[in-house]
Amino acid sequence: MTDLPRIGLGIDMHRLHPGRPCVLGGVKFESEVGPLAHSDGDAVLHAACDAVLGAAGLDDIGTLFEDTDPTHENRDSAEFCKETMALVHERQLRVWSMDIVLETERPKLKPMRKAMRERIAELFGVDVDRVNVKGKTGEQVDAVGRGEACRATVVALLGPA
Ligand code: MG
Image (cartoon, rainbow, N blue to C red; front, side, top):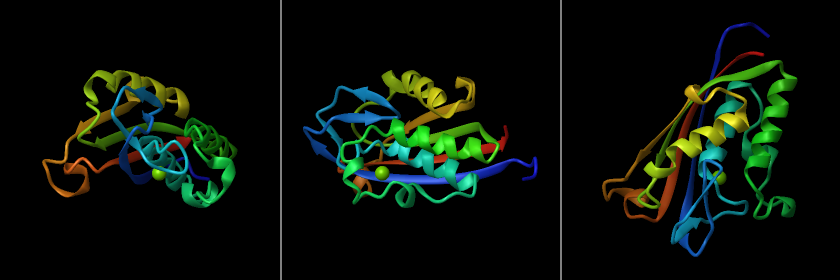
């Protein structure tokens, strides 16, 4: 293991359905729609785990936590983060910083950005000023723009613990 920084990229998308609970970035939103998935569908935390796992040279989230496994049904994605960080710590690494883009028409993200940053910082063991969350809409283009889905893209930088 060298002391050079390691970068990882994660992308995740979930359909939005009426009546589903809406948890994004580990934060519960009041929303008419929520992500449809086997787990709680938190696209932000899924993409964040994949970015961190990728940087650490580990298997991706879909391999580690298979969506056919009944134990993951409606599972709180915070648990995926905790298991991801246990693997990262085993490799004597830690998260240095994380930059996140969340694209969705609904819910409105601005009021919850601070809460998302704080929760993500807590889950990945990084200072809150090293986690950024940017909200974007889809400008009526593609599934995001039509309000059918949300998509998260995350870049994570890791270094020695
Ligand atoms: Mg996912």
